[in-house]
Image (cartoon, rainbow, N blue to C red; front, top):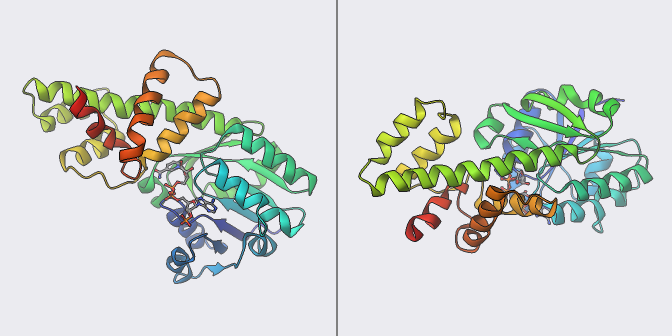
Length: 286
Ligand code: NAP
């Protein structure tokens, strides 16, 4: 099978840099985004565009999705002009969005009925890692199909690991984002605790950065708090969604319960801001 023709659906904060990396790696890329104006950035550097998801499927052998959630996934597969309406066979569809293991299993079954293949391949890392091709990619689905597309995934990430059958990638991703929720809330609470007792946040962050807890997340999000800059790289509404999905999967451990509740409470006011806007949500209540 010629795996040089890529279809890319979803040109949000993550989708744009990821699709660009495939174009820069020499693949022929056809893009589709619900809001058509976002396609211009890719078109200007050589991407083709498709009128519908069905048309895109016909033009590509491997189709990537990088869209919001379960509902968007269902719309893209089963909508009137959705992927499955093309009635094509032999296509490999890779959903890199953070969605539930359940929706992956549903879509994988629908794909199989048409002799197409589905992989779930969510990512860890944000816009910076997407731009640099340094994502961590966790994959669920058939091993033989994974091996065929691994070279393409390796253009997007620094690590590509198959963790099991359909939905396993999503489960691993929900585990990681549960930890991310703990970490974001923990960082916010540590800064607030120290600040209220006279420690400058800048000094606390310098200490954390040089300790065993120092990492790129603390660095970037610490800088964001200091600059009072909550422009979204990873929108708070997305982590709230991921924690809801983890809960639906039966995550009821002590910290998970607390963090799920905090982000759900923050979502209506701060959902469009960055995950670390949880700092603003917690500040007034402590
Ligand atoms: P985003 O900027 O909000 O973009 C969402 C994309 O989904 C847009 O292209 C949007 O189209 C499309 N979409 C939403 N609903 C749709 C529907 N019903 N039908 C068709 N298209 C639809 O999101 P993002 O930050 O790129 O994240 C994408 C996925 O990656 C999410 O699952 C997120 O949880 C996950 N993720 C994000 C990050 C991060 O740091 N941002 C990191 C790891 C994983 P429109 O342009 O028309 O709205």
